[in-house]
Amino acid sequence: MTDTPPLGLSPVINVSGTMTGLGASITSSPVRDATAAMMGHFVNMHELQTRASEAIERLTGAQAGFMTASASAGISLSVAGCMTGIDPGRAEALPRNPGPKPRIAVQLGHLCHYGAPLSQSVEITGGEVLPVGQSTLCTDHALHAAMGPEVSAALFVVSHHVVHYGQVPLDRFAEIAHEADVPVIVDAASEYDLRGFLAAGADLVIYSGHKFLGGPTSGIVAGRRDLVRAAYLQNIGIGRGMKIGKESIAGAIAALEAWETRDHEGVRERERAALALWTEALAGIDGVKATPVPDPTGNPLDRLQVMIDALRLGADASGIASALANRPTPIIVRNHEVELGYFQLDPCNLKPGQAEIVANALLELLTDHDALGQMPEDLASARNGGTDGYLSWGNEEGK
Ligand SMILES: *Cc1c(COP(=O)(O)O)cnc(C)c1O
Image 1 (cartoon, rainbow, N blue to C red):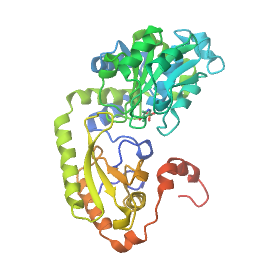
Image 2: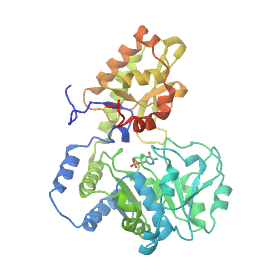
Image 3: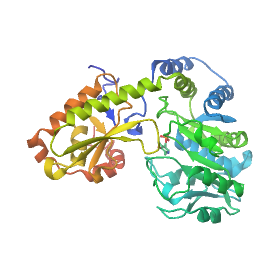
Image 4: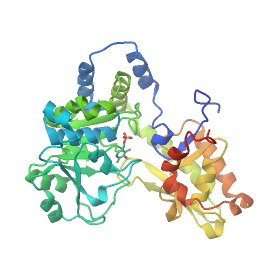
């Protein structure tokens, strides 16, 4: 298949997920058309954000919504909005003066890294993270005790990146926060469920437009009208550096509309077929065990977990993941848990024909005993790769 990106860029096969470092999403042609069409016009951006709000309201059930540069930006603007309310003077004073309620309560097990520390998305507003509980246990009483007069919001994170046990669930979290009149912000950047978090008590919910929605790079903020307006107001302040263009708003609206009519069952069928193909390719290779695993936050998506017995195969999961990434056409697998002895294959971003290329590459590599014998462990790159790429970019030897 010849399908190369422009500017002479190397093609990449993405079986990793929706990753910033791989260009987030590839969009459908209606989304591309909507983006291109908007580029030919001057518009009133508030009117365009009203159109965005209408689409967001329809899909999420929220009172209002707007779009910004990214989900990370959406978190910062939401936090800032909860601190300042609809007060332009206070919005302009951020981050120097966060006002009388600078604290944002977050369960310690939710303080994750999604490419940058979540805590920083709070701190760039001038606000302060108030960690609640311990990494693997947050009790109701710990959360209750944290809801002091300086707390302007409680932030809840839904993600495979967070600790998945011992945390206060969202409905209880919202109950406890609301008893203290503290609004709840939910980071649902990577979630398919557009309604459930608001229904469970969230006051503001943030989604990425460029993850499962398949839109251009963008962030969606949805929720209570007064808080959405206060978050939107931050565009006169810290939100300036997070601004979204008219083209991305148009594309993200088109992506929301496409989400409504997407053949979700058909998509799942194609994904299951890819998993079946890979399972078959790996069957019978000594030292390799492939198992479909459901998405850890309940998104309707299974991935193939490829468990590697390093002693029997001669190479470990991290080395194999790196070898796949170093092929002439890189195959990027999901490697954030390789120290546990496996990598995962995510079928949700495959282009036609790529499932077969991945199957063949796996079979070739995992039966090549000479290559496996010389494959070094590469656990550090799985952990530090996100930083290493930034460090080496632009250096004298670099490309
Ligand atoms: C991806 C992600 C983010 C950041 O989203 P962007 O839109 O890329 O800024 C924030 N939180 C979680 C849980 C994520 O998965």
